[in-house]
Length: 278
Image (cartoon, rainbow, N blue to C red; front, side, top):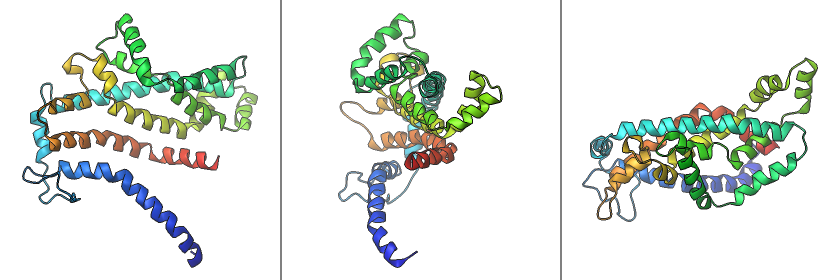
């Protein structure tokens, strides 16, 4: 690399490193706190980054301190709900996004505008209509009741629509010349080419579902159906709470997010590269 060019890019790398440290800071603090023993002061200033006597005892205590049905049941419930939520989003949002991106019909732009306008509606305003609808459908205290309101969102439709719109028309026309029907064009040509944006949506939606607390708290009543964030709330009361146990649970809850990112990392990076080039 040219030395002069290296000096010019040095401030940029320094800024990126600073942003990375600020972003990772809360997670590193949580990881460090979850590994500290009972004798260490977790509120000491300046806070030491590394625990003096690292231990996994907080994770083992977590399996004993959480009430029935226990840590692993809460953990499994979170994973199952995240899979259901992500599957519904892909199932319902993908066809609508494809239609808005590739099909020509009257009112298409108006429909897209109305979809985007819903992004301006605060989420808190939608909770009561969602709850009344879920009750009328008999889905209260079910996972389907938790996942159904998020199955079609303006964000997912817009993200997928942009991905489908970026695919060159020549590929679609080549398929039609070969006699492909509309369904074959969608399934065999468009969906494989849209893998980067689909992977991006899977990562975003999976992580959001795992971290969702308020809506499952409203819909779910049976403790056996509780997700991990709801289960961890039992560790905190008005009078006392153990910060080590809560951070240990929070660290454990991030494991599926890391795994799903690693699984879709290649497609996710390809999607970001395409967005930057676009």
